[in-house]
Image (cartoon, rainbow, N blue to C red; front, side):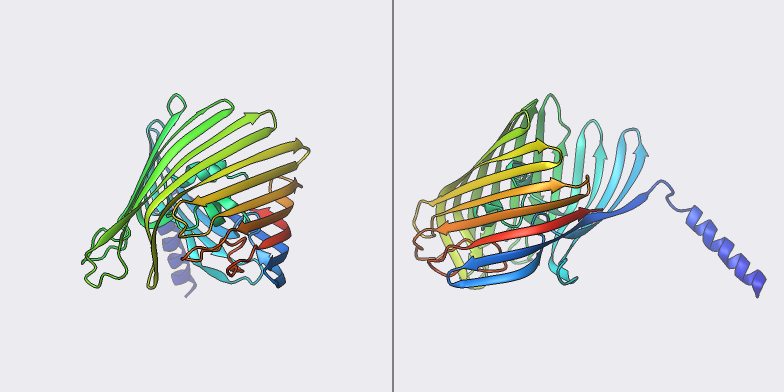
Length: 351
């Protein structure tokens, strides 16, 4: 019996040795929890919340060096709630990648759109829970999509180009439903970063029972950052127009613009500040105009552990026929005429 067991163990070890020994899998992520006081109208909520500064998540990454400058990577990101330990029903990116150090990379899976890399970088809070860029500017624009293919060039003389195409809902009776094309270009040189992007999305009109009538929306972005010593000045201009829908009952045609101005300040000794203001102006009046503000202070105990405080508020205008009210946080949706605000004091640990 002992001999048989030894032979089995040797066989298992040999099988493992025959595998791709150069492939390495790493587990990383963030655990972010905050004490929060959030108000909307006459309602106030005190709670412990997850992801005040960075979404709490697990990241699984596998990489392999294929030689000759070629490499492969697979990545899967899972969102969880640090306050309850429960896994979130939403997911972040999941993709497989083939890359060359001199040419760029191609990715297949669930991906952030090309435009996301521009306005996400120019967002002073990098997409924090109170970010008015996330909660107002791209309130109903596409930004992370399934069934996607992306191609990203290497950075050459400061220029980089990105393209993402999605297969949409993959419906046999309407192949264009949910399809998104995202194109972006950026230039970076010293203290200057500037980028442009446009996203085009096709959607079936939700009231068309034949599922043959397609509508289209277009979101265009201009993002810029300029660094002066430890201070970064950021700006984003967003133009949107077309048909937006949330099946099964909500859809509308609209157009308008939003602008973001902000800053990131490194005071040294682990202390950083950020501030961001977004103004949204809907040209048709079908949705509410609004102004959103987020400010924050961070102290880094180390490269991995950060304590922070953030404050955010949204001043919603007079609601139009659609009655859109922009939230300060997705955990507390404001009603018509309400101006939500929130304060968070939290701790984030990266691993």
